[in-house]
Length: 160
Image (cartoon, rainbow, N blue to C red; front, side):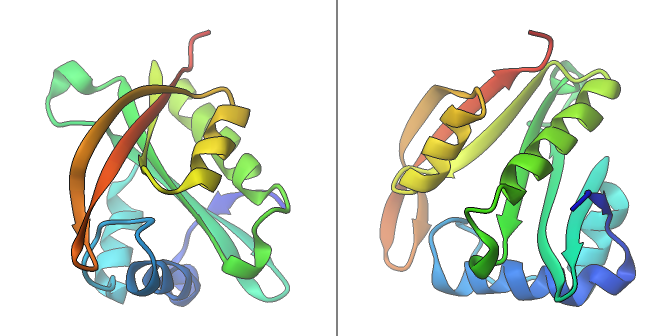
């Protein structure tokens, strides 16, 4: 599979993946499901919003945006990658992350950051395998399902 820019036709597949994660997991601290209009706005405003498609539709998606506001952070980006639960472990996350890094690097980005729930051992291991290091841990930064959760910031220097 080759990542492609998301289109309006991908919104239902993106919503299916994203909203299940919102409803059922602490992978994201986002409290409510994303509407089709919200997803369309994110596709339009992000520097890249990529999808992987197969015969069954959207298998996963990835996007990035500036890490924090202001021109001082213009070269620091934060990514989001979500896969359909039945397609994990097949290398799709690697494909999406490398495509996002390449896109960001071509636009002058210096670092790529992932914000990961502290209990998400799979994502932490994935990022380590992809050359990311833990750059910080913020205890109890997120609240979801009646509990506080740590936020782990992992990053990679794209110029290295």
